[in-house]
Every structure is written in structure tokens, then in C-alpha cells.
Image 1 (cartoon, rainbow, N blue to C red):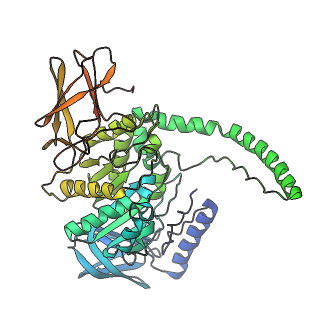
Image 2 (cartoon, rainbow, N blue to C red; image 1 turned 30 degrees about the vertical axis):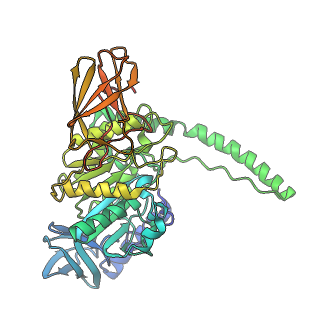
Image 3 (cartoon, one colour; image 1 turned 60 degrees about the vertical axis):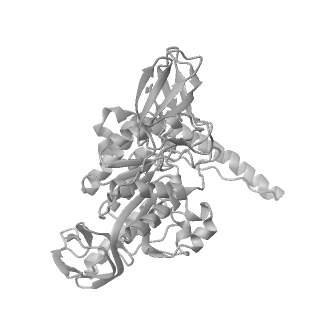
Length: 520
């Protein structure tokens, strides 16, 4: 119930070739496990292979398969650990924390021996989300120059196969590659620029696991237990059931369309004209089903020790009725990942939606993303100022990667830097005006134009007007001649905001509204 990752997909080295027609996948898994029983062969998952990066200064999980009862030894950097495969042919060990290192080798031995070569020990990050995380370097700004300059042997990328499943999986296909001008062009641009920045600033090896999939919704990435644990998320399974209920009608429509197509195809053969495209059969299961990407992608990846996650998603949830409860769904997703990894509240840094005309629920989705910062050990980067209001897939992923890097350096690596733009704290009344108080507001200024753009105020009637905005220290004072007693203020609360307030670090102010509700 899954499919190969177009262009980027490269098969792994092991049992993880669960490729991706369900019947074929079951057959391959069965054959692999039979071969383990018959040949008593030690196998490793695709994640544990040549060119991998192990997380420094943390226990590192190593696992694999073998014949039941087979004795396994793992040797690396003076550590030798022994274990025995269980009755299902599974085994695992935890390496003691190791310091940053390069050109490391590991040996895994049973009746056969597997050398794992050219290992780095450094920082491991997962880059996940939908199409703006998947958007690759070859489609970013200055792509030719970026690709030509990509010679970073201490950056390694594991491109995880895209798949979905009704049930939890334990392995995933993919391959570690060394970052070079030959390999970089088809990897995540935002993730690459993030990894490149960290590699330069930290002088540490960086491992980047890419697991992104365009047009995927948040609920597909969330465990079913997390969805069912929160009554506010009951709509998720209800909506999916409504979709399933349409299957008989979709099947009938497909059969009718096929009859029409067959007639048209027959006529095309007679006349020598082009055959029309064949209708697609309706699907009961798709990547949009709740939890199916969590099951097939996140669950197996959670065996691997990481530092944290960078995430860019939200477009697929930015619609009526679901944009507001995203503030419950997204934290549930993050918590379900943390539960799966069992590494505590690991850092989770995400990109707030950018800019796009004619998408009225984008500001509400951004608000839901901001609300997710209430979850511990999270950070958010703003992107509305670098996007393209006519295209959701904008090219400036360099700035996005840099802001993700800043957030990581602040949140994770303890640098004393500014990593956030101004954040609304409170509003106070001052006669016919209101004062907006911000955090992260040192050196308030405008970017690109003299006047401050993006603020609105309204009185008791709720009618909003563009506000006259004046910088006063780390505050903004708002007024409008038609609003005598301002009661509401908003900033950049549009699908494609024209807004230009930044702080001394040049980071844009976070959109907000004081009249938070389930309505726009």
C-alpha cells in the first residue's frame, strides 16, 4: 500500500526492500526472513550502512536480523557488545555515547560478518513534511551555483522511501549518500541549507534523514493512538469514514468512465488519432488516510537515534473547518513522534506557512502553528516574507534553511543569538490608539520601505482599517481616524500579507490577531 519515491528513491541494502505493491512487499519480506532462517545470515537495516552518521554524545541504537538464537557481536571504537537474536530473528544493542569522529568503521558479526564503513559521528536531524520540504536543490534559487559548490563530505543524506501502511512497519528503504555536486541536486533544499549552515557553524559532521512527501496532511503523519486520545480530533477519523462511504459511488462513476473511454479508444484506433487518457480507478486506501505515513515512515525511522526534527508542512491542512483544530493536531503529531522515539522531548523546529493569494485559511493555519509553540522544546521560523504569493513552491529555500539553522543554534546548541522575529505579547489602550508590546523586539525597524505595513485595527463594530503604525522603542502604536476606541489589532493576518516589520536581526514579526476565534 505504498509507492516508490519518484526520482529520488534508491533501494536499501536489506530486509527493507518492502517494495511497494502490497502483494510483492509481503512476498519479499517473507523471502528475506526465510533466507535468514535458512542461511543464518546477519542482516542490517538500510539506515545502518556505509556512510551513515551516528548521533554524538548519546546512546546509539543498532539493530538487525539473524537466525533465532544466533549470537551477534558489534564492535566500534573500542566498544564490543554481544547479544542474541530473539525467537523472531530480531536483535538490538545500544552503543555507549561517542564523541564526534570521522572515518569510523563498525563490524557486526554472527555466522557472517558485515563491515560498515566510512561512518561519521556528529549531529543527526530528520527533515520532514510536505512539498516545500521535499523541494530539491535543483529547483532552488541559484541552483547551478549551489550544486557546483556542494562539496561537503561531512554532510550525509539518507533519502527515505515514501510509503504508507495500515499497520506499523519496522524497516524502511533508502541509502546514505555523501553530499557532493552529484548527489545534492535531488535532496531537500531547505534541509540541505540547514545542514550546510550547521556543518559550518558547529564544525561537526551532519546527518540528514529526509522523509518528506508532497501534498500530505498532518493526520497521515500522526499515530492513530494520538488522534484517538484527543476528543477535539474526532473529526479526523469521521472525515476519513465519510470519504470511504463515497467509494461505491466513485466505483460506479469509474466503471461508467471506463465504458466511455473504451469506446473513445476504439474510435481513436480506427481514425488514427491520439488515444485519450485512461480513467484512474478509485482507491480505498491512500496516503491521506490517518496515520498511514506514521506507520510506514516514522515508526521505522524512530529506531534511529537523532538530535531533532525540522518540519515544513501545513498547506494540506489550511482549509475551512480543519485549519483551526490544526493547533491540536500538530502538537499531537509531535508528541506521537516523541513517544515513538523514546528520546524525551527532542527539539522540533518547524516552518510557518509562507504566502499564497486566494487561500483565505492560511492565516488561521499560521496561527495554529504559532500556538504549537506552547509545546516544550519547539521553535518556529517565519517565511511569509520570502515566499511567492502566486506559487506555493517558492525558490528561496536558502533563507528558510538559514532561519532553521538559527533556531537550532539557539534552541539546541545554546548560542546567545536572536533566532526569532518580534512576537506579540500584549495590547494596551491609549485613548484613540493602542500600544502593541513585543518580545524579541530589539531594534524594531521596517524592511524595504519607510512606512510600516501590515497592521490593522478595529473598533467595537469589528470593521477593520489599515492602521497608522509608529515605532516607539520596542512597541508599536496603532491608530486610524475612523477608529475612536480600538478593540482589535492584527498584523500580517492575510493569506498573502504585505508586512515589513523586523527586528535588529532582520527577522520578520510573527503574524497575529488579538481577536482569536474559530472564525476568520
